[in-house]
Length: 291
Image (tube, rainbow, N blue to C red; front, side, top):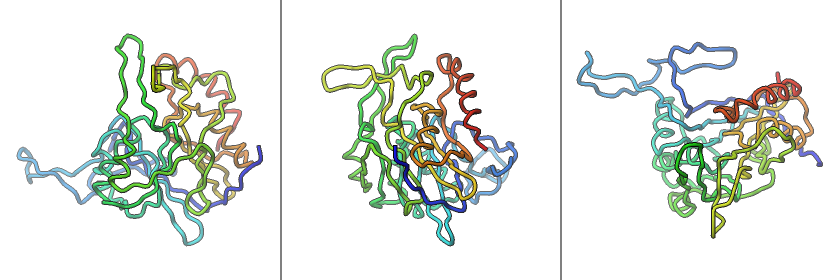
């Protein structure tokens, strides 16, 4: 594979907007700065508290969303990576964290599962008709169901193409790598699967128009890559259904850059099936030697 030149940036700032946990007592650690209660001007009325109100906090939910800002010289550019699970979680947290969605230049959705997409509803209500590009893989629209052990088959909610267009987003589909933010951020597109221990999502089926078919690979899973000058690659995943090791190796091959400065996002290593893979994953990550 011929490598793609990814222009270096001086700095990348990742602001997690939607996550599974909120903990106001978690301390800052290294470059990670945490939200502090009392730092927002928003409050909610309460009839049971002295003073009659309580400060707003970010909402936790089973989903993910983050702002990614790259800085090169005096230029700072921001996009949204994933949008969370509920219509209002992303919208609420942007307001609580005092983040202005008008700064966004694009949205990248890591894959089609609704816990990474549904917050686009609230974003559209917050921004109005924005013509904001939404970058996805063509399989993003697949109708899917989960076959979890001991449970009835569960068909997942699917994102509506017509609804996204109607509320003002511009859909950009592609399987191949693509640049955003003036060539300073790379979307991987479809990720090569090159090892034998990252199984994808074995519990998933997809509807082929006639019947349900096994769909473990989640081919729409994609990541984003930033090259930080003198430090190496910063790679961000949504769920990491392609496998975090597959994703990092693909990022290295795409860019021709071996050094990995940081990796952040979902690794999908929870539950009995994936816990058995943690050892092999850790060994492979150690061999990649991220900073």
